[in-house]
Image (cartoon, rainbow, N blue to C red):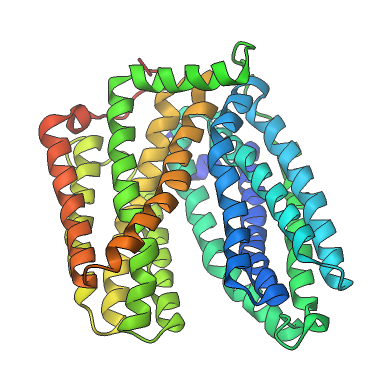
Amino acid sequence: MQDAQNPRTALLRDRNFTWLMSGGVISTLGDQFTQITLPWLVLKLTGDAVALGMAVALMGIPRAILILFGGALVDRHSPKRILMLTKHVNTVLLAVLAVLVYTGQAHLPVVLALALGLSLASAFSIPAGTSMLPHAVAPQHLQAANGMMMGLRQITMLAGPLLAGLLFALAGDGSDGPQHMRGLALAFGFDCISFALSAWTLAKVQPRPFAPAARQPVFKSVADGLAAVWRDTMMRTCFIYWGLCACVIGGVMQVALPLLASSRLHGASALGLLMGAHGAGALLGMAASGVAGKRRAGNLGMTLLLIDGIAGVLLMPLGLITASWQGMLINVAIGVLGGFVQVAVFTWIQQRVPRELLGRTMSLFMFIFMGLAPLAAVAAGWIASRVTLATLFGGSGLFLVGAALLAWLFTPMRALRAAPAGTMV
């Protein structure tokens, strides 16, 4: 009875969850090192912004394209099996990269090829990782489990860049020549070890019995997953709504925040403060989601739409600020709201979707943010060259408020409620 009233206590006693959580934290911390180090390595090797763009594209585009197929394979072969395989692949790729950098043999074509390999692996690890939790913990503990996992992941995303920067300062980042890249090699080595350790912890997880999806061609499997989401009126409505919000808000923020920091604040340091404030706010929101449990403003749908409307109002004045602290306050508030929503949405999808469709559904959800938002950033950049920052932020905030209001008035989202597992219709 105590565990039922205290899901966090029950989770910490659950060996499956503790192994999965510890491995996830270790792996995510290592990922932060590579996400910073790889673009920096390309820049130090070439001094060319075009080459840097190629590296970023190789890390993002294949992942966005193949993530839907990754979800289909997860449903066929189980999340644990796919996740374990990707961890072994990443361990090998990062070991090769670390050795090449340490010995001074890292050249651009090889680095780009390894970056492509890491991107391809992530196209399968992301749907596997996001599908793993419902297979490892009891359904009634998903909300608390998501809150704890995402909160710890957010901590690593804050700590990782700081630790990587310290490593570069102590061991060299290549600024003084290719012979001083030991810090970069050690960063890749750290990520390599993190994948090996997280593979070991994943091996300790004993998931619930897995019922694989019917064997069929991968393209048909992907099409069946898309069709299942489309047939579910509530799921279809939510995904379309979240896709529009991701395109407008995600695309704008990737472009407008750097422009704001560059033109009105104090350059890269101000951008770091703004992003850090958003990350800290998201951490607080994830923690609040775990504490709040199932308490809502009405039902889940009304809560999500209300939060989106408030976030839109907060976004509007961001283009008018004149000091970093003002932007930090706004970004903390937006981050809190976003963190709360993220936990609630992940939990709702995991509970609603049958396990045999979970990989494909989560891969579609992640595609919305990893595939559409970067493409929308291109359009946002074009718009930003023709309007003021105040107009860009104000218009984006107004769009979010309007989208939330229209969704409440004209779609079934206002009736969205938490549902028992496997109720997708």
